[in-house]
Image (cartoon, rainbow, N blue to C red; front, side, top):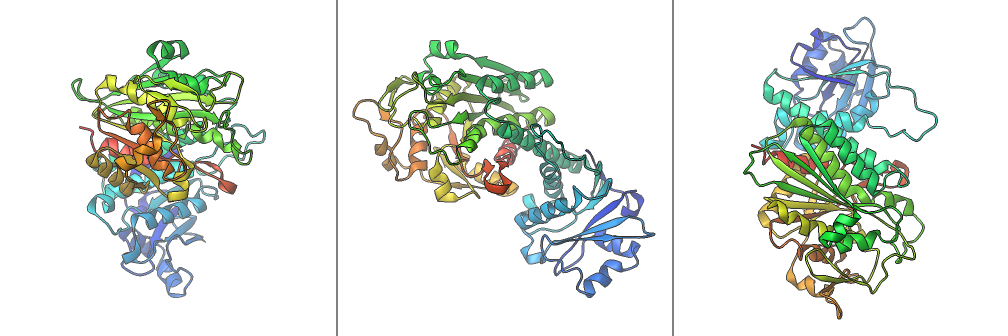
Length: 496
């Protein structure tokens, strides 16, 4: 797909389809006024006749004859007072639903001059162009690699987005949005790949391929022998029941100054989770291929960095393993010694994500990080608490937590903070080891984070529980690409 910006008059851009916005109430955007004038007042006539309501996310396609365009897509953007970034995203998604599989080969999208409610950082033209770019890539995504009959190629080949000028800031914002969308789509590809293909060694190969594709990415992979020598026994314990060996994947992006401390991303990479000896129910177990959603989002974020090259240092660490039941698998009651030296009594082998993450969190101390953010499809309890709308966020640092929450608000990739109080730590008490790997049913998301916090005391750390946001179930089953937008926004705010 060819994407570009234009600041020409809309009638000067040759295109099959024009996309404009009509509000339910309020002032029309300038591009809509210009389109109406070029069409002899047609849009205003249809609005007065009630054919165009302007209700948010409503879409009308108008075929035209002997006009500058073959058709016009009119997107409703609601009332001025209700036009939040979230509602604008809904309108953009509805617009793409009508455009992407339609008959047009090219389109001119005139939506960046639609005013939004909210803070300047959210409602600026740069922010709108960033969002439009992201939605374009995100909504054009398909995953058909394993279908024997491929769908017909889309007719749409070229999309031009109207901007108020040719300023570098506008182009950079649009291109960052496109790159974020591509990072989300890469995350989706990894998540949607079946687990008989996507296993720890395969994930490591993807990291090596990224280093070959982008000179700014350096990749190192630790195998099971290297991890055993270091003492990363909890990652090894999780992988013991599988024929697929675990891997610790390290990717480094050094775009900042040599002395700048890196921001570290840690991703849970359980490529399939049966629960191990604590076997999960069969229903819905196929979706446990998404248990590597944390690692997939790390990959997607690193791809965005490699494409946009911000001035920041970022290290990505992925703890990859497959959790299977086997004669050699870890048992409930086993005690293992972590890389930190602390011991863990494994009471439930289905609480394996925190086991691979704890060794990774200890390992990243070697990078002297500015901050560490881990992401993991960690607890079903987070879905019960927050549903599929918000990512759970827990942190040992208020400033870091607030920055991540703000990034989520700006991008619509929202998170909600849960407490990490010391009072919850006692639920992890063990009679036989330094700690147990589960704390019972109450506050399951919090006690999982409490477990991780014990290995993150030496730096600023935040944990993102993406169990409810990394993928969709049901008819729309598939990876979502979250929380790539949140992570990219957070990192970009710290780029020099």
